[in-house]
Image 1 (tube, rainbow, N blue to C red):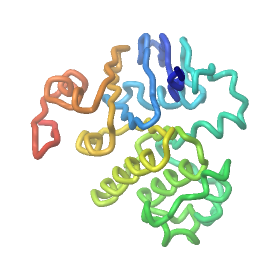
Image 2: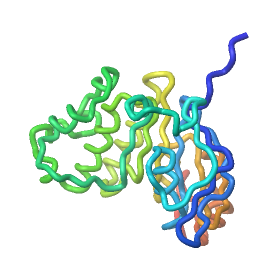
Image 3: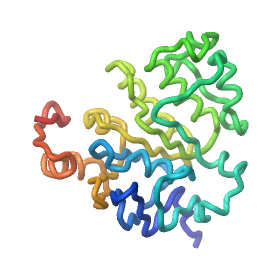
Length: 246
C-alpha cells in the first residue's frame, strides 16, 4: 500500500512573537496539495510574520519547526527551496525600471514556470512598460505573475488583492482557483482582510487572534458571524452569501 505524500508545508509547535507580543502559540498545521489557504486576522495579528516564516525568511522571534514536503525547512539548499516555494510580499520594492516582460523572465527558476499567459492576470498590455511606472494594482498583479513563473508548487502571497479594483479582485480569485486546479501538487497560502474575497478564493482559513490563539479549518467553518466576531472584535452581517462587518 502506497503511503500518502507528506504535506507541502507542516508546522509543529510553532511560536512567533514580536517584542513582547506573542503572535502565534503552538501552531500545529499542514498545507496539502490542492488546498488554498487564506490567513485572516486584525492588523498586526501576525499574518505577514507567519507568511515570512513559512517562506523561510527572518522574523522577529520564532520557535518550533516548519517542514517542506516532510523535510525540515533549514535543510533545504537555497536553489532547491526556490523550486518548492515562491514568495510574494505585501508590496514590491523596485530598484530598477525593468520592463515587465524582462522582470518575469528573470523570475523564472525552472521550466515549469514558463507557462503563464499574461492575459489571465490582465497584464499582457503591460509587458513592455517599466515596473516603476505601474499603478499599485498593476504592480500587484505583476508580483503574482512573478511568483507564478517561478514554477514552485507552493505560492505564499501577502495581500494579493491589495490596491485591486472589484473587477480585478474577482479576476485574481478565479486565477488562484485555476492555478491550483490546473496541475496536481500545487497549493496556495495567502492573506486578506476582505472576507467576501476570502469566501471566493479560499478552500481553508487560518485565523490569527493576535494573542497567540489560532483556529484553522474549511472556509465554511470559519466564515460566520460568531467566529468572525471573535477574530475581529466586531459584529458581522450575512449579505448575499458573504459577510460584512457592522
